[in-house]
Image (cartoon, rainbow, N blue to C red; front, side, top):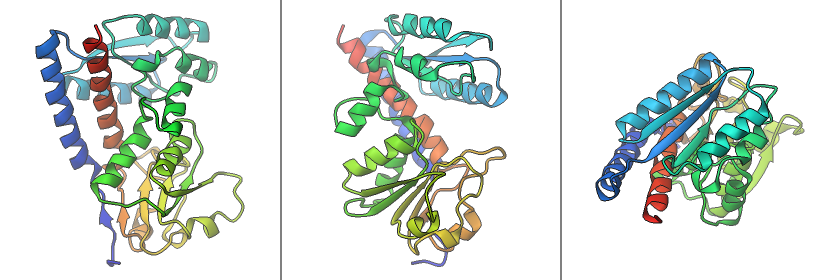
Length: 284
């Protein structure tokens, strides 16, 4: 093991993936006369959510993907949000749908997600997509987990037989990334806020995915020497869930925050939007 971990540069890989998506989008537009279209839906004006949506729309534009933005007031009800998403699901001019979350404490997000047609669920948030990931069927991966797997592949991390520990169990990150790792023949352990003696488990991880949503929650002392560390945390101030300075002296590979998992999430979203548009337009 080197003295400090090798950085997993998600920004550089994401740029290449987005360039490939842009080439495919341009080819599809030439062949069909229609550009791929991603609809983004935002409830309220949470500053972080507004920034995320603006960034995603800008990346769409650079990749030759049209974006349609639906901004709904903070007082929007679940029923109104479901109606909006249902209409987009039935609109042949829209190929992918992204509901920016969190949508607000008064919104039943699961009901809203389930209004997204499976063929347009390019963010991989529906039960249909989770089942497809779990059973190895055709479908869209949750974007952050999908991006993590692309990053591991790029750095030639062989997952077969490895012990992967996922710290976090959210429906769009922790749970699906575990399913994707399991599909690659890793042995997967899920940990969470009620896990007893967490450090004893993380120290056994060949691959550690931190997705707990707590800044600098995991430190170098919690790691197995030579572990591959994926920090999927996104906390205020661009701080990850892993204490980078202590972890990089113990890990063999590590993702920085920012510049690691984040760019891969957006790259996966754009790729899956082009995939969705290709399937829909060629089926016409």
